[in-house]
Image 1 (spheres, rainbow, N blue to C red):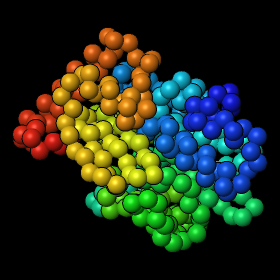
Image 2: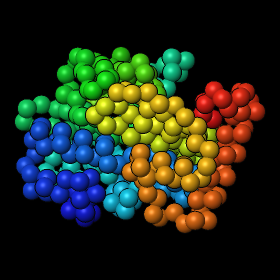
Image 3: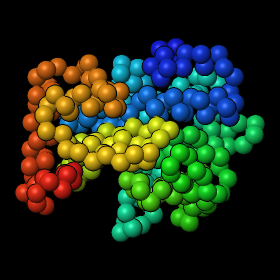
Image 4: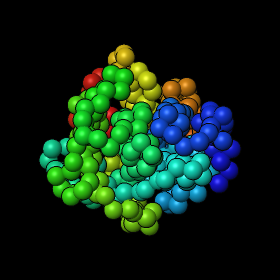
Length: 286
């Protein structure tokens, strides 16, 4: 992996020779969160991906993002190359109360060990943490959001992350044992191909910053945090402008023909939503 190119991508080439420390880890995490969006548009473009961290890192360096397997997988390569002791963990993100806590492997999470303790590092939660959290039970405030960290009730020796009530999911549990990227291959295939997968049903893009989080679900753009925004995108031009301006995704690797095809798929998904749920004036996503 081209470490210098990766650091340039996230705007921190100055960290190339920075020694591992809690402060430098925090700077890396913030830069990555704010420059590399959480997105699953490759699914909607008909471009299969794998969980190979080098493949993910190459795509990120080229200007794109990814979801948890991609973002945390690539960051684990970057942090390891910079001298950090990184461990991958099998995790489960709980979407709602009905599902209950679980370890289904629908999430990859990282921990980093430093002389002053261990840290929860997660670039793949979409609208959650902006900075690493110390692996110490407690409540943590980051910008307008409040998070909780406590021992997991379903994974002995593991941890439970409780999201802010305004977040897109309830929480996440992970066990203490190290995981390999191959442990996530089956779930990745399911999440990227199953008609029941949220990634397949809705094109999601998210980006966290100091003041809040921007989210695009289908054609609905929202902002939560320092200000509120909820609007429906109505033109192809505005959609790709939002990807570039709000999420830092110029989509330079996507041809005009692919853009048109993606736009039609998004419109069709929105129309299906409206037919099932009512007027688009409510500005809800598919």
